Structures are given as structure tokens and as C-alpha cells.
View 1: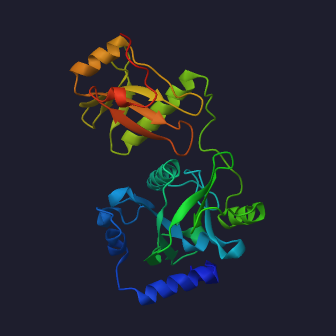
View 2 (view 1 turned 180 degrees about the vertical axis):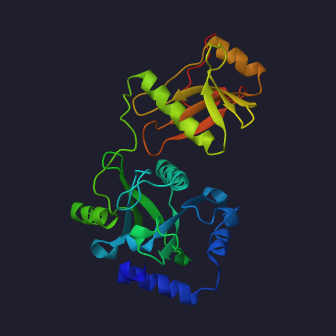
View 3 (view 1 turned 90 degrees about the vertical axis):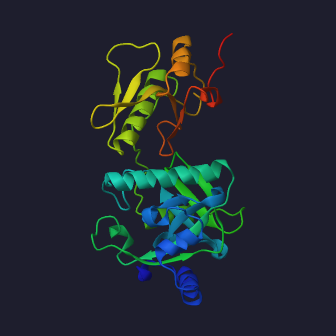
Length: 305
């Protein structure tokens, strides 16, 4: 709601809203390069044309720091909403997608484009009030960037404008309170990086939840198979993919395929190497490689001659 927005931030939003041409929230992100804007208008971040990453900036959560610099601090815990309480499955997935895109920008040292948004209900109620709707959405002319990425504190800080400035500790703590982050609650049990079994289980769990979002079921094979270890099946039980699952995390990035898996990969079009990176973190994401592309997978040990 407008009364929750810092005056300096609200002034920019109102100026942009009153001076710009009249566009709907869908048209705004479409103009910024979001191809499927109509279907994804409720998402929290988008990968647009030119590999531009666009993020929603909730004006109610924007803090104004020293020198008038704007920043947004948000939780890296995708399971719990602002102020506590569990999120719906849809909101969890949208939040994870947003975190992954922000991490992608961080890894690429890439600026973020932003849409500034205010809402018709209090920000703490945005995920629970059935009447919740956005009030205003405007494109921000200033770039944003990832200034702080702290898995330990489970928060990320996005800053508007040039790099080189970060909020001080007092400003960060005030912003954590503003965002309703009471504690850095983990979203999953800690992963013992040295234990391949833990990494594997967490990677498999990530994939199971991902494919479940499409109505598919992921199952480990009951009997050992030399070529793959899990199948993804549709609602009728038809096999869609045959997976070898690998997980990577800081300090545990290497893995190998057996000769049997490599041989199976070359002859079965349903085979995939599923690599889940950043296992155990909110930024966990995966990529699938077929038999022709498997050697492009980062961390895969080369085939022995």
C-alpha cells in the first residue's frame, strides 16, 4: 500500500506513472522484452529477450539508505512468506524461479532491470489476502544489481544505481525487520557436502518436486540398471525420461559416469544426465543433458580411453 512506501520512492513511481504512456501491467513487461507476458504476468522475475533479467521490486519493501540510495533486502528462504507462515506450492515455485534468476545475474555480473510495483493491500498480506491486487506497476529507468548475496544469513540485497555502495549493518537489520525476516530459517536440512549420498538425495528431491509441478512422477528404479537410475513418468505411467542424477555444491563439484551409463546414453533418446547445481541452497537449479551433449556438463570427468 502507498502508505508503506518511502516518500522518495513513491514520488518516483507517481512521476513515472503520470508522465508515461498508459500501459497495462502485461504491456509493460511485454515492452521490456518478456515474450510470454500475458501468461507470466504474475511471475516475480522474467528472463527477457537479449538475456535481460527483469525483477519485480515491491516498493513497500524498498529502503532508502545513506546518500539516498535505494535497496531491497529479501529472504532467500522460498518456503516462508513475509512475516512467517508457509507459502503455497505455486508461490514457492515462483519464488525459487526468482531466486535462480537473481543468482544467474550475480554469477554473470549482470545488471537487473526492474519494474516498481505497489499493491492494494498491506505487503504482509499480499500472499494471503484473496482480494490482493497490484496497484501500480511502472518500469524503472535505473538499473539494479546484486550487492549482497548471503546464504549464511539467507538474504540477498539488491541496490538501485551504480555499483560500489552497500547498506551498512544497521540499515540491513532495519530492512530485515521491514521484510519480516525474523531469523534466517533454512528451507531444508543441511547438506553434508562431503557425503555424495546426501548430495544425491537432495538432487533427486529437487528433481522430484520440479517434475511434480508438471504432473509427472519421478521414481528410482527398484532393480539396478547399468544405464540409468530413475524414470520420469506421466499420469498414465508412460516413461518420458530416463535419468542419471548428479548433484553439485560448493566443495563438491566433480562427478563421473560409468561406462554402462555412457553406452546407454548413446543409444537411448530418452536418457538424460540431470545435474542439480547449488544443492541444498535456495538457488538450486538443474539442467538436463542428452547423450550427445553430456560431455558439456560442468564438472563431469572425461571418459577414460
